[in-house]
Amino acid sequence: TVEERARAIIRRRQDSGKIRDRRKTASIFDKPIEPDKPITQGRAAWHPLSQRAQAFWFLLPALVFFGLFYLYPTIKGFQISLTHYSPLGQSVDVGWDNYSRAFDDSLFVQTVANATFFTLFSLVLGLLPPILLAVILNEISFGKGLFKVLYLLPFVIPAIPAANLWKWIFDEGFGVLNSILLLVDPSAAPVGWLSDQRWALISIVIMFVWKNTGWFMLIY
Image 1 (cartoon, helix red, strand yellow):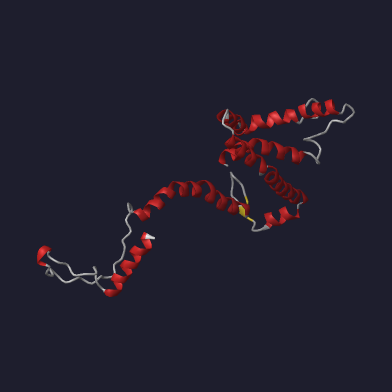
Image 2 (tube, rainbow, N blue to C red):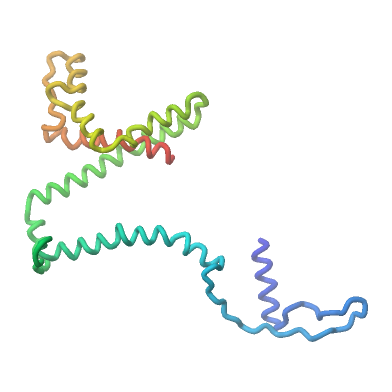
């Protein structure tokens, strides 16, 4: 490449101790004006407006927000977890007692298992739909903008209205999903989508995938 050839030329000049390959000449007289000066090893000074510093300044706002709203709360939360925290009084250091109590609690273990299942299941269900929708929308030529807005609409809806919407859909008594199941099989018993432990977590995962599919599709 041009950069490699330039570096090779500079390296040869440094090895020879001369700035140029030939002596400087004075126009038509073709006589040396001055001898070539040897290259001295210099030290590059850091300047806040240099090209090397541009990446740092571009990253600085993101680093500040990351430190204020993610790194500091994480460290502070870990420090609080080692105390018997009192927001109005004096906190008492208890060491690792909170963690030992947590791991001895069966409810905490079940919570970690549910969170792990939710993460894995949402990744599996939420991987292919946005990719397929992105490929389809990339291929069609009519109504692409409208479909993008429609698919992105669930992501724009705030979490509380979206949760209430799916609460009505999953309702055991008058929910839309159970009504459809009764139309297909009138003898079927209503399913407790949010009250039955077999279906509650899956129902929440379905709502999560529905809400975020449009955003992932837009990224793809």
